Amino acid sequence: MNRAELLIAHVIASVGPLGDEEYVTPRMYQDMEATIRRFAEKRLDPLLARARKTKVRHKGLLLKGIPHEEIARAARQKKADLVVVGTHGRTGMARVFLGSVAARVISSSPCPVLTVRGR
Image (tube, rainbow, N blue to C red):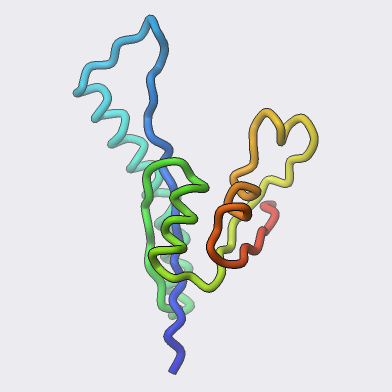
């Protein structure tokens, strides 16, 4: 019996301070977080719908925090056999300044990581 399950994760980065001159009321902060969450759910929903059509066992994970840390943590907690992560394929200075979530996932994942370059 195939017990495989596809976990589809989207990580929401925490809303940080906006700057020394900016003040955000707790209500504004909650509104920003709610808007970000709705946006993330809209990104996750089509992927879950595609998995549902193929009749693959699946579950959506909406995580919050530092992307590579949350992906690695979820992989550990769910005892994942493989992590598949998209990559922009940046190299050189773009990668230095923008970083690479995929590279960080590779270095912190408890299991093998397959990177897939986006379109």
